[in-house]
Length: 125
Image 1 (cartoon, one colour):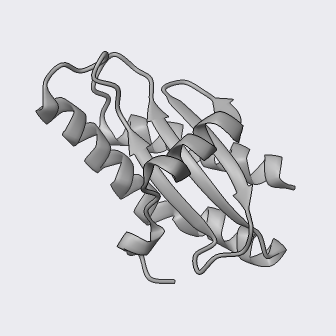
Image 2 (spheres, one colour):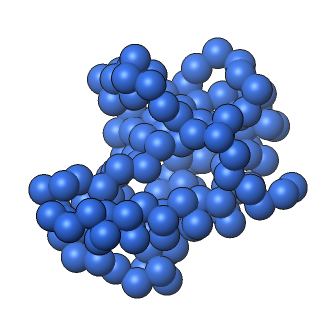
Image 3 (cartoon, helix red, strand yellow):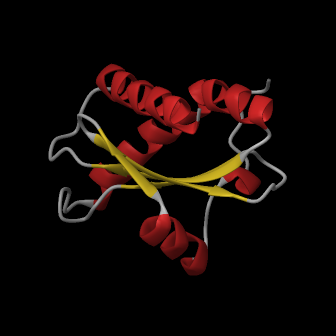
């Protein structure tokens, strides 16, 4: 598997985001909240969007740093999710929201994201 994060893997558009946010199942751990929704088959098994609330970080540079770190963790560890989804022939849309009020280190964010992704995999079973 190539460790890329293409545009086709990103979730965008108001209708798609609203659908996931309003109809999806919620999972929350330390500093990450994941909302996921199973969808009919698509080209990619998983489409993702990352969000950092302006309420938590007023400066855009802080929000962008956190989103960059979240995307990097996802890009490196998405195979955990993809292997399970390909095996079950499912597709999902995921909305990942950062909840902490502080900028965490890359390693702490990685641990939180991995824990949340593993919970999603377990819930899909």
